[in-house]
Image (tube, rainbow, N blue to C red; front, top):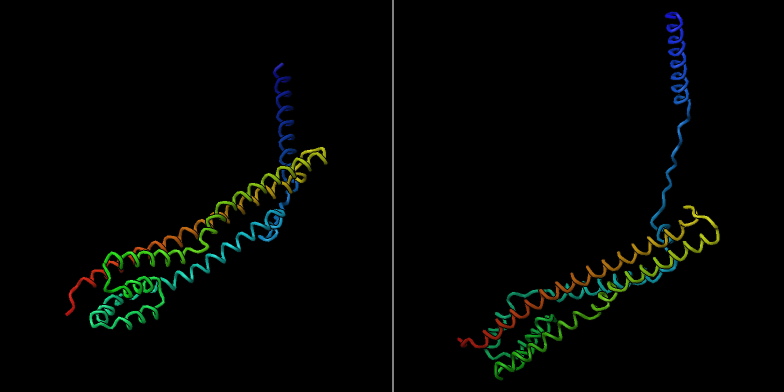
Length: 243
């Protein structure tokens, strides 16, 4: 009986060793699956967004044009002359008003245009001078803000175009599924590309337009505060007694 048990145990051990060898052999001989990497260019990705990418591209070009054009104009308007009021003081107190007006015109900045209106009204009550300078300053700031609302509008409607593209992509997915009678990644990939790319494109254009709009507005506000300080200095200068 003991011999029978020992023989049975030896047979089981031999079978287990053979099975483990077969498993190891099978693992070693199984060929590795090769993973092929497919790259896609940015332009190809954009083209997969469909026709809705055309109005988004137009909105992007308009936003960039307005931003660059306003940036150049505002940069020119930001030119500063710290000695402007001091130079005008000497001319005004010496009675040389015409040269003071000519100096303001030659500078050709919103700040000098505002002061020019004050110089032309020297001799009138201070409140009238202040009112004329306020109106001139508002007009000059308005000129700098021209077309700025277009940037604001683009920032608002670009994401809406992206949402329209998302809806079109979803419709495309269901239409392709109805034709193929099956749900596979190859069938729905076209609609998924259009859905995601148009959403991303709309958000990118909208965020860019909003950033440009608020950054330009910040520069205009800084110039407006500087013009207010210059106006105060000019009015204080008029109240100073001439030497």
